[in-house]
Length: 280
Ligand code: NAP
Image (cartoon, rainbow, N blue to C red; front, side):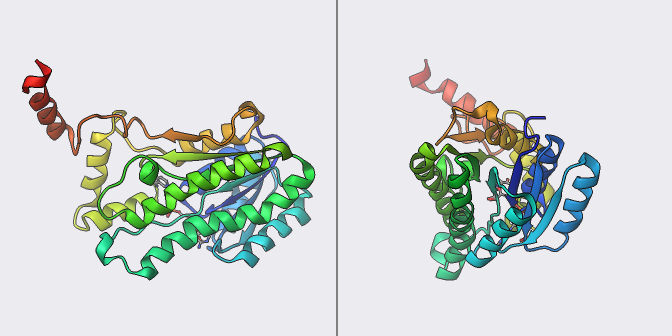
């Protein structure tokens, strides 16, 4: 159990990737402070505590609110006396063409995705500095850092900013024994991925997901638990010499040199390339 006796605070733990991370961390022996706005997260905490014989609490926390973040850390410290790991995972994504994205839509992404990670990091770091150890895992994305599709500008900008936050924190707090790394997932099968699929084609979201899976070299979306396994590694002592990095976990989706929107199109593009004179 690579996280035995560690205490982890996880934001965005009510569903999707955050819930998957919580389950993997519980299985690895960590005690948990699960944060989100949905009160149903308490049920997740109770279930994991019983199933894996760990301690888990739920704290209501809107990451855009500094006082909520401070309260989550306070409740965690009161309960466990230490916080060894922060997973800053809470995030939002709403597609919208750039010229139609008003300041509210932009701020919606920046406030949750950027300021949320900022706020929770600022709340948790003083305790980590005091105890002279800690591991922070920030949920970025391949979107913004490596790729982007039309309609993703606000989301991509916010996720790319998290790479800067990760590297800057890693540099500033290295001497305090604190490591900071980012995870950059491709598509993960969560309510957010479902909502992106619905926003892309409300009449047939499953075909959107099937198209994404088809264009991914490993031919499927990731599961939240697979992101949890990577987060557990980055939060554990197994990664003790890794800091300031961004780890891509995307089933190879950013690998293809061709623009691939489905198997057939990919083959057509490859054939065209192969037949073109510069390849002969
Ligand atoms: P999801 O299914 O929509 O879950 C989002 C989580 O964030 C929920 O637990 C939600 O909890 C929480 N959240 C949203 N706004 C919040 C706020 N203001 N304060 C506190 N919590 C808030 O999304 P997901 O797919 O699991 O994504 C999790 C993270 O992974 C995000 O940062 C996302 O950008 C990133 N990511 C996802 C994918 C993907 O394909 N799914 C790919 C790359 C990166 P409440 O609503 O209960 O507060």
